[in-house]
Length: 146
Image (cartoon, rainbow, N blue to C red):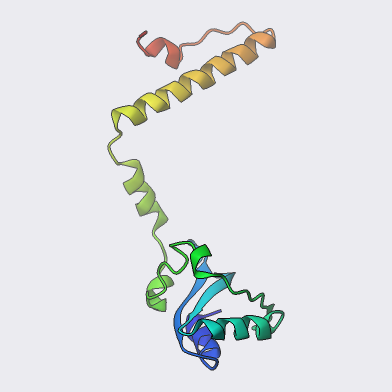
């Protein structure tokens, strides 16, 4: 599915104000579903009724009219971006490097340490239950007592 083809197809019934096809963030391929908004809401009823079960581009369409109050605020997020921009590959390594190099707040650090200590305690308990006596320096010894 491409936005231009879908808009062309649905615009024969009425003016399409917004159209968004859901895509995989990494591969940019269509997930197989999308959303179309018409200028006149009654047109959406006609299209939903006429094309429910219709075959298009080798896929069966499931068409439903969603009331405006049930739409999520981000349903049409990015609908106005050009296709070229949508299909641009995402540099995941660069994005991940940026995410990981952000400074950690004190609360985030405390939460991380608490989780590590809990995991370590659980691991020590499992070792003891298995009859294994093994002592190692872990996070619990490194964290100052409160």
